Image 1 (cartoon, one colour):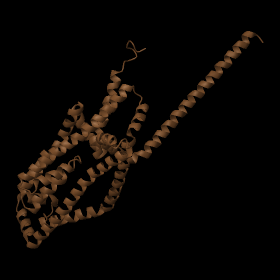
Image 2 (cartoon, one colour):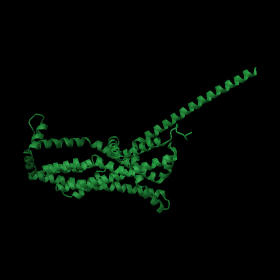
Image 3 (cartoon, rainbow, N blue to C red):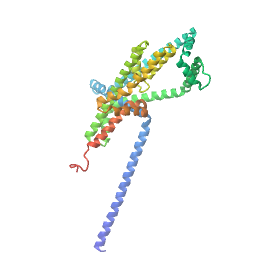
Length: 378
C-alpha cells in the first residue's frame, strides 16, 4: 500500500476515534449534569416541607453562636453538651412567653365571660343596647346592614353576629387541630436542626464554602453579609416590638384601661408576629370599650391609635433599624419585608432581608470582577 495512502488512512482513523471520544465525553457530561440536577431536585423536594423550620433553625443558631462558642470553651470542647444547652435555651425562650400569654389569655377570657354574664343577668346589657341604638352612627350601620329592608334591632344583630362567629369557629376546629399538630412537628424539626447545626455547624460551613462557585474572598464576604443581615433583622424585630409595646401601653393608659404596662408587654411579644401581632391586643380592647363599657369615643380613639400609630410603625421602623446596621437603603428593605411577608408569612420578616443581602452581594461580586476585555485578565 502506498505510504501516503496509509498515512492518510491512519490520520482519518485517528480523527474518527477522536470525534467518537469527544461525543462520548459530551454525552457523559450531559448525563452527569442531568443526574446532578435530578439529585438536587429530589433533595430539595425532600427538604421543602421543612424549609421554614430549617430557616428558623439557622436564625437561632446565628443568634446563639457566641453563647455556644463560650460554652464549648467552658466545657472543654464538648460540642454535644454545649449544643444541647443552647437548644434548651431556645426552647425556654419560646415556651415561657407562650405559657405566659396562654395563661393570661385564659384568665382574661374567664373574667370577660363572668363580666358579661353578670351584665346580662343584671339587665345592664339590655339598657346599654337601648342607649347605643339611639346613636345615629349605630342607626346608620343597621340601615346599611339591612340592605333596604326593615333595619334589625341592635340586640338581634349582635345575636346573629355571635351565631355566625360561633359557626365559623366550629367549622375551623378540624383545620385548627391540623395546623397546631403541623406546628408542633415543625417546632420539633427546628429543635433537631438547631442541635446539629450548633454541634457540627463549623464543618457544614466549610463544606458549603467548598461548593460555592466563588473566589475565597468572595465566599467570606458573602457569609459575613448574610450573618450581619440575620443579626440586624433580629435586633430590628426586638426594637420594633419594644416601640410597639410602649406605644400600645400609652394608648391603653390614655383611655383609662387597666394594667397598661402588662398589656403593653403582651403587645410587644405579639408584635413579633408581623402585620397581625399588635391587632390581637388593641382590637379586642376597642371592642371591649365599645360593647362592654359603652365608651364610643374612647373605643374610636383606641382603634385610631392602633391603626395610625401602633400598627404603622411596624412597616416604617423595621427597615430603618435594619438598614442602620447593614448599610442597605431602608426603602429597599421596606418593600423587601412587605413582599417577604406576602410570600413567606412571618418567615419573610427575616428571610426577605437575608435574600436582599445575598442578592446584593452577588451583584457586587459581578460588578467588581475584572472583565475579560480589561488588561491583566489574561
